[in-house]
Length: 397
Image 1 (cartoon, one colour):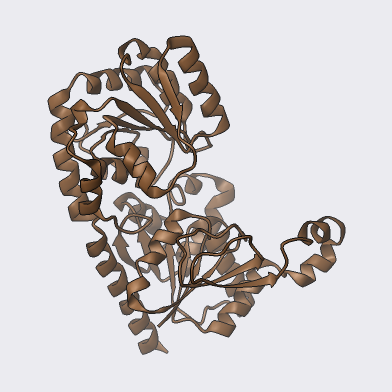
Image 2: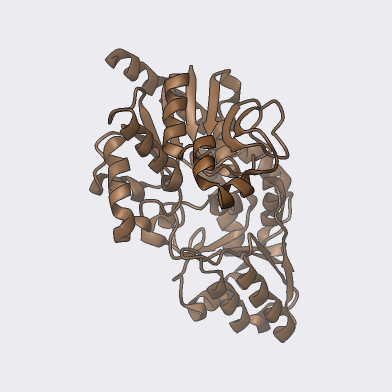
């Protein structure tokens, strides 16, 4: 069985999703339209990218169009027409690869660049793909970009062209149907696949959330992430943070600067966590009483699932109702607005004073994770989904 993924080769979510298939022994290929660096966990698969990288994952078979570490910038700047001949447009390269590999299934991981590359390849192949197409929406694909006129048409075209769909929340099933999807939903599962829940619980140790003295903050400040509101909220309630350390992960420069000023102005202990492996971030959640994630848009955040497993009490925004599929507000977490630091601050203070609630939430959240995100259950669902799609495809051919 041969599967061709189209996705971001540097994304840990891409690497973790593909890793689910490692025990199957299937012939797995990854085409990266962005030509990014290769994530170290993309072990043992075939990777198709534009130019040579400085490091390859263990056991990966990496093929390049430009097999040199240097020279591409010179051609791109000075001889763009020549470079276009050396490295053809993404859709053309993908179309050629599809013709060469003849995959049993094509699976695009995310909308922008990835699924749109599949659309361009489909056009070059006469308007139809020779293999079934699965699309996995990620984060804000359908919810946020579906509200933007310039993005809505590509979303509709992807959803009306693919036959199968994975997503991470029920909200996106409804939105996908609204935007023209008429195929089959294969599963509502975490975007990076399942988690080793039992192992992670063991990593968290025996310290109850009420005994922990860290507040973990997602530091993304983008058109969809609003970590500044989280920092502003912590400033408002800084008098209540004595004895606690604020630790920011995935922090952008503007967030790091805001956090630095928070520490200087209020005396709050602030630490910026450098880019880290999954396990180090899990360990951060394992020492946190509260996990704070503020965004204007998202699907089901992987960081939310990880925090819930590790026992951190989640204070989270709820774009379009996706988070509420996991959190009952006031029971196993709190749902807050994305742009009201005062309300977020009040919720933080409430969680700092509610020992019994944060401890009880940990037990509820771990049960949810075992039910909905355990890696053995998710792997079984995903493998069976691919087998089903391929059997249907072969029966129709």
